[in-house]
Image (tube, rainbow, N blue to C red; front, side, top):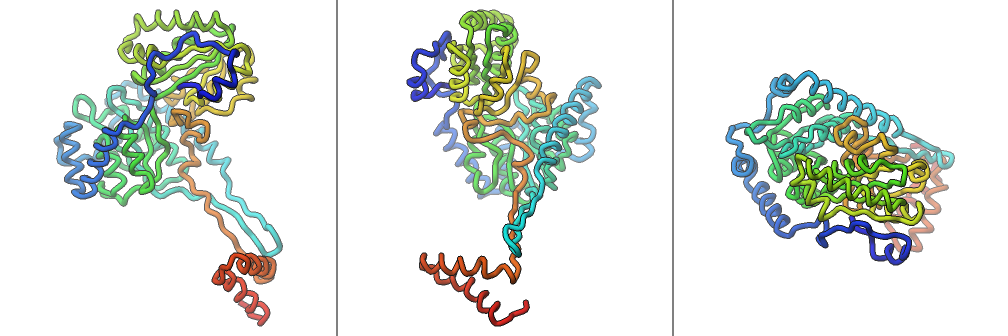
Length: 443
Protein backbone atom coordinates (compact mmCIF):
# COMPACT_ATOMS: atom_id res chain seq x y z
CA UNK A 1 0.00 0.00 0.00
CA UNK A 2 1.50 3.27 -1.10
CA UNK A 3 0.18 6.81 -1.18
CA UNK A 4 -0.49 8.27 -4.61
CA UNK A 5 1.89 10.93 -5.90
CA UNK A 6 -1.00 13.35 -6.38
CA UNK A 7 -2.04 13.04 -2.74
CA UNK A 8 1.51 13.48 -1.53
CA UNK A 9 1.63 16.79 -3.31
CA UNK A 10 -1.72 17.92 -1.93
CA UNK A 11 -0.72 17.11 1.64
CA UNK A 12 2.87 18.33 1.52
CA UNK A 13 4.05 19.29 4.98
CA UNK A 14 1.07 17.71 6.75
CA UNK A 15 2.60 14.28 7.39
CA UNK A 16 5.92 12.50 7.82
CA UNK A 17 7.06 8.92 7.27
CA UNK A 18 8.49 7.43 10.46
CA UNK A 19 9.00 4.10 8.68
CA UNK A 20 8.79 3.74 4.92
CA UNK A 21 8.65 0.42 3.01
CA UNK A 22 12.15 -0.88 2.28
CA UNK A 23 11.12 -2.36 -1.06
CA UNK A 24 10.16 -0.39 -4.14
CA UNK A 25 8.38 -3.41 -5.61
CA UNK A 26 4.59 -3.38 -5.68
CA UNK A 27 2.94 -5.67 -3.14
CA UNK A 28 0.78 -7.31 -5.81
CA UNK A 29 1.50 -7.52 -9.50
CA UNK A 30 0.59 -9.70 -12.42
CA UNK A 31 3.64 -11.85 -13.09
CA UNK A 32 3.87 -12.50 -16.86
CA UNK A 33 5.42 -15.91 -16.24
CA UNK A 34 2.52 -16.89 -13.99
CA UNK A 35 0.04 -15.58 -16.55
CA UNK A 36 1.69 -17.60 -19.33
CA UNK A 37 1.77 -20.80 -17.26
CA UNK A 38 -1.86 -20.45 -16.22
CA UNK A 39 -2.91 -19.83 -19.82
CA UNK A 40 -1.10 -23.01 -20.89
CA UNK A 41 -2.73 -25.05 -18.14
CA UNK A 42 -6.22 -23.77 -18.87
CA UNK A 43 -5.79 -24.47 -22.56
CA UNK A 44 -4.57 -28.01 -21.92
CA UNK A 45 -7.40 -28.77 -19.49
CA UNK A 46 -10.02 -27.38 -21.86
CA UNK A 47 -8.59 -29.54 -24.65
CA UNK A 48 -7.94 -32.80 -22.75
CA UNK A 49 -10.67 -32.56 -20.12
CA UNK A 50 -10.59 -34.50 -16.87
CA UNK A 51 -7.49 -36.48 -17.90
CA UNK A 52 -5.49 -33.26 -17.78
CA UNK A 53 -7.04 -32.39 -14.40
CA UNK A 54 -5.85 -35.72 -12.99
CA UNK A 55 -2.37 -35.25 -14.45
CA UNK A 56 -2.00 -31.90 -12.73
CA UNK A 57 -3.47 -33.29 -9.49
CA UNK A 58 -0.81 -36.00 -9.55
CA UNK A 59 2.10 -33.79 -10.60
CA UNK A 60 1.33 -30.68 -8.54
CA UNK A 61 -0.70 -31.97 -5.59
CA UNK A 62 0.77 -35.44 -5.23
CA UNK A 63 -2.75 -36.90 -5.45
CA UNK A 64 -2.62 -40.51 -6.65
CA UNK A 65 -6.18 -41.66 -5.96
CA UNK A 66 -8.41 -42.45 -8.96
CA UNK A 67 -11.22 -40.22 -7.62
CA UNK A 68 -10.88 -36.62 -6.46
CA UNK A 69 -14.30 -36.42 -4.81
CA UNK A 70 -14.91 -36.95 -1.11
CA UNK A 71 -17.95 -39.08 -0.42
CA UNK A 72 -20.85 -37.68 1.55
CA UNK A 73 -20.08 -39.94 4.52
CA UNK A 74 -16.48 -38.69 4.61
CA UNK A 75 -17.72 -35.11 4.53
CA UNK A 76 -20.17 -35.72 7.38
CA UNK A 77 -17.52 -37.52 9.43
CA UNK A 78 -14.77 -34.94 8.88
CA UNK A 79 -15.37 -33.35 12.28
CA UNK A 80 -14.58 -36.61 14.06
CA UNK A 81 -10.85 -35.92 13.60
CA UNK A 82 -11.12 -32.63 15.53
CA UNK A 83 -11.14 -31.90 19.23
CA UNK A 84 -14.49 -30.93 20.76
CA UNK A 85 -13.13 -27.42 21.35
CA UNK A 86 -12.10 -27.05 17.72
CA UNK A 87 -15.47 -28.31 16.48
CA UNK A 88 -17.30 -25.90 18.78
CA UNK A 89 -15.20 -22.97 17.53
CA UNK A 90 -15.91 -23.85 13.90
CA UNK A 91 -19.62 -24.24 14.60
CA UNK A 92 -19.61 -20.80 16.21
CA UNK A 93 -17.91 -19.23 13.19
CA UNK A 94 -20.27 -20.89 10.72
CA UNK A 95 -23.32 -19.81 12.70
CA UNK A 96 -22.22 -16.18 13.12
CA UNK A 97 -21.25 -15.82 9.46
CA UNK A 98 -24.62 -17.27 8.43
CA UNK A 99 -26.51 -14.91 10.74
CA UNK A 100 -24.72 -11.87 9.31
CA UNK A 101 -25.38 -13.11 5.76
CA UNK A 102 -29.05 -13.63 6.63
CA UNK A 103 -29.18 -10.01 7.83
CA UNK A 104 -27.81 -8.83 4.50
CA UNK A 105 -30.25 -11.01 2.58
CA UNK A 106 -33.19 -9.62 4.56
CA UNK A 107 -32.19 -6.12 3.49
CA UNK A 108 -32.42 -7.04 -0.20
CA UNK A 109 -36.14 -7.01 -0.91
CA UNK A 110 -38.01 -7.37 -4.17
CA UNK A 111 -39.85 -4.16 -5.10
CA UNK A 112 -42.39 -2.84 -7.58
CA UNK A 113 -43.62 0.62 -8.48
CA UNK A 114 -46.24 2.03 -10.88
CA UNK A 115 -44.32 4.77 -12.67
CA UNK A 116 -47.46 5.91 -14.48
CA UNK A 117 -51.01 4.54 -14.78
CA UNK A 118 -50.65 1.18 -16.50
CA UNK A 119 -46.81 1.17 -16.41
CA UNK A 120 -45.54 -1.13 -13.68
CA UNK A 121 -41.84 -1.82 -13.16
CA UNK A 122 -39.92 -3.71 -10.55
CA UNK A 123 -37.10 -6.05 -9.70
CA UNK A 124 -36.62 -9.32 -7.89
CA UNK A 125 -33.48 -10.90 -6.53
CA UNK A 126 -32.67 -14.29 -8.07
CA UNK A 127 -29.62 -16.31 -6.97
CA UNK A 128 -27.12 -17.68 -9.46
CA UNK A 129 -27.68 -21.40 -9.89
CA UNK A 130 -24.23 -22.82 -9.14
CA UNK A 131 -21.04 -21.68 -7.40
CA UNK A 132 -17.60 -23.22 -7.15
CA UNK A 133 -15.66 -22.32 -4.00
CA UNK A 134 -11.89 -22.65 -3.71
CA UNK A 135 -10.81 -23.32 -0.12
CA UNK A 136 -7.11 -22.62 0.61
CA UNK A 137 -5.48 -25.40 2.61
CA UNK A 138 -1.76 -25.02 2.02
CA UNK A 139 0.74 -24.00 4.70
CA UNK A 140 -2.11 -22.36 6.62
CA UNK A 141 -5.43 -24.23 6.23
CA UNK A 142 -7.81 -21.26 6.41
CA UNK A 143 -10.91 -22.93 7.80
CA UNK A 144 -13.11 -19.84 7.82
CA UNK A 145 -12.89 -19.52 4.04
CA UNK A 146 -15.78 -21.97 3.70
CA UNK A 147 -17.99 -19.82 5.94
CA UNK A 148 -17.37 -16.78 3.74
CA UNK A 149 -17.92 -18.49 0.39
CA UNK A 150 -19.98 -21.66 0.71
CA UNK A 151 -22.04 -20.44 3.67
CA UNK A 152 -22.80 -17.00 2.25
CA UNK A 153 -23.73 -18.47 -1.15
CA UNK A 154 -26.15 -20.84 0.58
CA UNK A 155 -27.62 -17.93 2.59
CA UNK A 156 -28.24 -16.21 -0.76
CA UNK A 157 -30.20 -19.26 -1.92
CA UNK A 158 -27.70 -20.73 -4.40
CA UNK A 159 -28.98 -24.28 -5.10
CA UNK A 160 -25.61 -25.92 -5.86
CA UNK A 161 -22.29 -25.09 -4.23
CA UNK A 162 -19.26 -27.31 -4.84
CA UNK A 163 -15.89 -26.81 -3.16
CA UNK A 164 -12.31 -27.73 -4.01
CA UNK A 165 -9.35 -27.82 -1.64
CA UNK A 166 -5.79 -29.02 -2.22
CA UNK A 167 -4.52 -32.03 -0.27
CA UNK A 168 -2.38 -31.27 2.76
CA UNK A 169 1.18 -32.33 3.44
CA UNK A 170 -0.08 -35.79 4.43
CA UNK A 171 -1.74 -36.17 1.05
CA UNK A 172 -5.24 -35.97 2.47
CA UNK A 173 -7.93 -33.32 2.72
CA UNK A 174 -7.65 -31.17 5.82
CA UNK A 175 -10.48 -32.31 8.13
CA UNK A 176 -11.08 -28.86 9.62
CA UNK A 177 -11.49 -27.27 6.18
CA UNK A 178 -13.83 -30.07 5.06
CA UNK A 179 -15.84 -29.82 8.29
CA UNK A 180 -16.16 -26.05 7.82
CA UNK A 181 -17.52 -26.64 4.33
CA UNK A 182 -19.93 -29.24 5.73
CA UNK A 183 -21.18 -26.81 8.40
CA UNK A 184 -21.66 -24.21 5.66
CA UNK A 185 -23.94 -26.45 3.60
CA UNK A 186 -21.63 -27.57 0.78
CA UNK A 187 -23.10 -30.01 -1.74
CA UNK A 188 -19.95 -31.72 -3.01
CA UNK A 189 -16.24 -31.57 -2.06
CA UNK A 190 -13.26 -32.37 -4.28
CA UNK A 191 -9.63 -32.76 -3.23
CA UNK A 192 -8.18 -30.68 -6.00
CA UNK A 193 -5.87 -27.70 -5.86
CA UNK A 194 -4.83 -24.66 -7.83
CA UNK A 195 -5.51 -23.89 -11.46
CA UNK A 196 -6.81 -27.38 -12.19
CA UNK A 197 -9.50 -26.99 -9.52
CA UNK A 198 -10.79 -23.70 -10.93
CA UNK A 199 -10.64 -25.06 -14.48
CA UNK A 200 -12.50 -28.25 -13.55
CA UNK A 201 -15.32 -26.29 -11.90
CA UNK A 202 -15.52 -23.72 -14.68
CA UNK A 203 -15.39 -26.23 -17.56
CA UNK A 204 -17.89 -28.64 -15.99
CA UNK A 205 -15.47 -31.55 -15.52
CA UNK A 206 -16.64 -32.71 -12.08
CA UNK A 207 -19.93 -34.36 -12.96
CA UNK A 208 -21.76 -31.04 -12.75
CA UNK A 209 -22.56 -28.42 -15.35
CA UNK A 210 -20.02 -25.58 -15.48
CA UNK A 211 -20.49 -23.34 -12.45
CA UNK A 212 -21.80 -19.82 -12.89
CA UNK A 213 -19.31 -18.29 -10.45
CA UNK A 214 -16.01 -19.15 -8.77
CA UNK A 215 -15.08 -17.62 -5.43
CA UNK A 216 -12.40 -17.92 -2.78
CA UNK A 217 -8.82 -16.87 -2.10
CA UNK A 218 -5.65 -18.57 -3.27
CA UNK A 219 -2.06 -18.05 -4.38
CA UNK A 220 -0.86 -16.11 -7.41
CA UNK A 221 -1.77 -18.97 -9.77
CA UNK A 222 -5.31 -19.17 -8.40
CA UNK A 223 -5.72 -15.40 -8.71
CA UNK A 224 -4.43 -15.47 -12.28
CA UNK A 225 -6.74 -18.36 -13.18
CA UNK A 226 -9.69 -16.35 -11.90
CA UNK A 227 -8.54 -13.39 -13.96
CA UNK A 228 -8.37 -15.47 -17.14
CA UNK A 229 -11.63 -17.33 -16.48
CA UNK A 230 -13.59 -14.14 -15.77
CA UNK A 231 -16.22 -13.67 -18.44
CA UNK A 232 -16.65 -17.37 -18.90
CA UNK A 233 -17.71 -17.42 -15.25
CA UNK A 234 -18.29 -14.67 -12.73
CA UNK A 235 -15.77 -14.23 -9.91
CA UNK A 236 -15.93 -12.63 -6.48
CA UNK A 237 -12.91 -10.33 -6.88
CA UNK A 238 -9.23 -10.37 -7.78
CA UNK A 239 -7.44 -10.34 -4.44
CA UNK A 240 -3.74 -9.86 -3.89
CA UNK A 241 -1.72 -10.26 -0.68
CA UNK A 242 -3.64 -9.61 2.52
CA UNK A 243 -3.42 -6.02 3.84
CA UNK A 244 -3.96 -4.29 7.15
CA UNK A 245 -3.93 -0.63 8.11
CA UNK A 246 -4.45 1.06 11.46
CA UNK A 247 -5.35 4.61 12.42
CA UNK A 248 -4.28 5.25 16.01
CA UNK A 249 -3.71 8.23 18.29
CA UNK A 250 -1.96 8.82 21.60
CA UNK A 251 -4.59 6.78 23.47
CA UNK A 252 -3.76 3.56 21.62
CA UNK A 253 -1.75 0.70 23.12
CA UNK A 254 1.45 0.31 21.04
CA UNK A 255 1.73 -3.38 21.96
CA UNK A 256 -1.74 -4.12 20.58
CA UNK A 257 -1.22 -1.99 17.47
CA UNK A 258 2.06 -3.75 16.70
CA UNK A 259 0.49 -7.17 17.29
CA UNK A 260 -2.38 -6.37 14.91
CA UNK A 261 -0.02 -5.17 12.19
CA UNK A 262 2.08 -8.32 12.45
CA UNK A 263 -1.05 -10.46 12.60
CA UNK A 264 -1.80 -9.66 8.97
CA UNK A 265 1.86 -9.48 7.88
CA UNK A 266 1.92 -13.17 8.85
CA UNK A 267 -0.21 -13.97 5.77
CA UNK A 268 2.74 -13.65 3.41
CA UNK A 269 6.14 -12.07 2.88
CA UNK A 270 4.59 -9.44 0.60
CA UNK A 271 1.61 -8.56 2.83
CA UNK A 272 1.67 -4.83 3.59
CA UNK A 273 0.87 -3.36 7.01
CA UNK A 274 0.44 0.39 7.48
CA UNK A 275 -0.03 2.62 10.52
CA UNK A 276 -1.22 6.20 10.22
CA UNK A 277 -1.06 7.98 13.56
CA UNK A 278 -1.63 11.49 14.86
CA UNK A 279 0.96 10.83 17.59
CA UNK A 280 4.64 10.72 16.70
CA UNK A 281 5.39 9.12 20.05
CA UNK A 282 2.88 6.34 19.42
CA UNK A 283 4.31 5.71 15.95
CA UNK A 284 7.86 5.39 17.26
CA UNK A 285 6.69 3.11 20.07
CA UNK A 286 4.90 0.82 17.60
CA UNK A 287 8.04 0.50 15.46
CA UNK A 288 10.03 -0.49 18.53
CA UNK A 289 7.33 -2.88 19.73
CA UNK A 290 7.00 -4.59 16.34
CA UNK A 291 10.71 -5.34 16.27
CA UNK A 292 10.48 -6.70 19.81
CA UNK A 293 7.54 -8.99 18.99
CA UNK A 294 9.18 -10.27 15.82
CA UNK A 295 12.18 -11.50 17.80
CA UNK A 296 10.05 -14.19 19.44
CA UNK A 297 7.36 -14.77 16.80
CA UNK A 298 7.14 -18.34 15.50
CA UNK A 299 6.28 -17.07 12.01
CA UNK A 300 8.99 -14.40 11.92
CA UNK A 301 10.30 -15.77 8.63
CA UNK A 302 7.03 -14.59 7.03
CA UNK A 303 5.96 -11.59 9.09
CA UNK A 304 9.51 -10.21 9.36
CA UNK A 305 10.15 -9.68 5.65
CA UNK A 306 6.61 -8.39 5.18
CA UNK A 307 7.04 -5.78 7.92
CA UNK A 308 10.54 -4.84 6.82
CA UNK A 309 9.80 -4.60 3.08
CA UNK A 310 6.16 -3.50 3.01
CA UNK A 311 5.41 -2.09 6.46
CA UNK A 312 5.01 1.67 7.01
CA UNK A 313 4.35 4.13 9.82
CA UNK A 314 3.19 7.64 8.95
CA UNK A 315 2.68 10.56 11.33
CA UNK A 316 -0.21 12.84 10.34
CA UNK A 317 -0.42 16.35 11.84
CA UNK A 318 -4.21 16.13 12.36
CA UNK A 319 -7.06 13.69 12.04
CA UNK A 320 -8.30 15.16 8.75
CA UNK A 321 -4.89 14.40 7.22
CA UNK A 322 -5.06 10.88 8.66
CA UNK A 323 -8.41 10.36 6.95
CA UNK A 324 -7.11 11.67 3.62
CA UNK A 325 -4.05 9.43 3.78
CA UNK A 326 -6.06 6.33 4.67
CA UNK A 327 -8.75 6.91 2.04
CA UNK A 328 -5.93 7.11 -0.49
CA UNK A 329 -4.51 3.77 0.68
CA UNK A 330 -7.98 2.14 0.58
CA UNK A 331 -6.84 -0.88 2.63
CA UNK A 332 -8.43 -4.28 2.75
CA UNK A 333 -8.68 -4.29 6.56
CA UNK A 334 -8.77 -1.06 8.56
CA UNK A 335 -8.56 -0.81 12.35
CA UNK A 336 -9.41 2.36 14.27
CA UNK A 337 -7.91 2.75 17.76
CA UNK A 338 -8.48 6.34 18.84
CA UNK A 339 -10.28 8.52 21.36
CA UNK A 340 -12.88 9.41 18.72
CA UNK A 341 -13.53 6.29 16.64
CA UNK A 342 -16.93 7.64 15.52
CA UNK A 343 -15.29 10.58 13.74
CA UNK A 344 -13.17 8.24 11.65
CA UNK A 345 -16.05 5.85 11.02
CA UNK A 346 -18.20 8.74 9.75
CA UNK A 347 -15.39 10.29 7.68
CA UNK A 348 -13.66 7.33 6.01
CA UNK A 349 -14.95 6.02 2.68
CA UNK A 350 -12.39 3.60 1.22
CA UNK A 351 -11.78 0.27 2.96
CA UNK A 352 -12.82 -3.36 2.65
CA UNK A 353 -13.96 -3.80 6.26
CA UNK A 354 -13.46 -1.58 9.31
CA UNK A 355 -12.68 -2.67 12.88
CA UNK A 356 -13.65 -0.10 15.47
CA UNK A 357 -12.05 0.24 18.90
CA UNK A 358 -9.21 -1.27 20.88
CA UNK A 359 -11.13 -4.48 21.47
CA UNK A 360 -11.64 -5.16 17.74
CA UNK A 361 -9.01 -6.99 15.71
CA UNK A 362 -8.89 -8.32 12.16
CA UNK A 363 -8.20 -11.85 13.40
CA UNK A 364 -11.75 -12.07 14.75
CA UNK A 365 -13.07 -11.66 11.22
CA UNK A 366 -10.33 -13.78 9.66
CA UNK A 367 -11.43 -16.76 11.73
CA UNK A 368 -15.16 -16.16 11.23
CA UNK A 369 -15.94 -15.10 14.80
CA UNK A 370 -17.15 -11.59 13.93
CA UNK A 371 -19.62 -12.75 11.26
CA UNK A 372 -18.50 -10.30 8.58
CA UNK A 373 -16.96 -11.54 5.34
CA UNK A 374 -13.18 -11.61 5.00
CA UNK A 375 -13.09 -11.90 1.19
CA UNK A 376 -12.26 -8.25 0.54
CA UNK A 377 -10.71 -6.00 -2.14
CA UNK A 378 -6.96 -5.40 -2.01
CA UNK A 379 -4.42 -3.22 -3.85
CA UNK A 380 -6.64 -0.12 -3.71
CA UNK A 381 -9.72 -1.95 -4.97
CA UNK A 382 -11.71 -0.63 -2.02
CA UNK A 383 -11.84 2.75 -3.78
CA UNK A 384 -14.48 1.32 -6.11
CA UNK A 385 -15.54 -2.12 -4.88
CA UNK A 386 -16.84 -3.85 -1.77
CA UNK A 387 -16.09 -7.30 -0.42
CA UNK A 388 -17.96 -10.53 -0.97
CA UNK A 389 -21.49 -10.60 0.39
CA UNK A 390 -24.90 -12.16 -0.18
CA UNK A 391 -25.61 -9.55 -2.85
CA UNK A 392 -22.77 -10.86 -5.03
CA UNK A 393 -24.62 -14.15 -5.46
CA UNK A 394 -27.91 -12.46 -6.35
CA UNK A 395 -29.03 -10.98 -9.65
CA UNK A 396 -31.45 -8.04 -9.34
CA UNK A 397 -33.60 -8.87 -12.36
CA UNK A 398 -35.85 -6.08 -13.58
CA UNK A 399 -39.23 -6.39 -15.22
CA UNK A 400 -41.88 -4.14 -16.73
CA UNK A 401 -45.56 -4.62 -17.45
CA UNK A 402 -47.46 -2.21 -19.74
CA UNK A 403 -51.21 -2.08 -20.09
CA UNK A 404 -53.12 -1.19 -23.25
CA UNK A 405 -54.22 2.06 -21.64
CA UNK A 406 -50.60 3.13 -21.01
CA UNK A 407 -49.54 2.52 -24.61
CA UNK A 408 -49.90 6.12 -25.91
CA UNK A 409 -47.75 7.40 -23.04
CA UNK A 410 -44.84 5.24 -24.13
CA UNK A 411 -45.35 4.63 -27.83
CA UNK A 412 -45.74 8.23 -28.97
CA UNK A 413 -42.53 9.27 -27.23
CA UNK A 414 -40.66 6.27 -28.65
CA UNK A 415 -41.93 7.15 -32.16
CA UNK A 416 -40.54 10.67 -31.82
CA UNK A 417 -37.16 9.60 -30.45
CA UNK A 418 -36.73 6.73 -32.95
CA UNK A 419 -37.62 9.00 -35.89
CA UNK A 420 -34.91 11.46 -34.82
CA UNK A 421 -32.35 8.67 -34.40
CA UNK A 422 -33.25 7.06 -37.70
CA UNK A 423 -34.09 3.71 -36.10
CA UNK A 424 -37.06 2.67 -38.18
CA UNK A 425 -37.50 -0.81 -36.70
CA UNK A 426 -37.64 0.59 -33.19
CA UNK A 427 -40.20 3.13 -34.37
CA UNK A 428 -42.30 0.39 -35.95
CA UNK A 429 -42.63 -1.55 -32.69
CA UNK A 430 -44.31 1.49 -31.16
CA UNK A 431 -46.31 2.50 -34.23
CA UNK A 432 -47.82 -0.95 -34.67
CA UNK A 433 -49.09 -0.94 -31.11
CA UNK A 434 -50.64 2.49 -31.57
CA UNK A 435 -52.38 1.24 -34.69
CA UNK A 436 -53.74 -1.78 -32.83
CA UNK A 437 -55.00 0.51 -30.14
CA UNK A 438 -56.78 2.78 -32.61
CA UNK A 439 -58.29 -0.22 -34.35
CA UNK A 440 -59.78 -1.32 -31.08
CA UNK A 441 -57.70 -4.46 -30.62
CA UNK A 442 -58.91 -5.88 -27.33
CA UNK A 443 -55.90 -8.12 -26.69
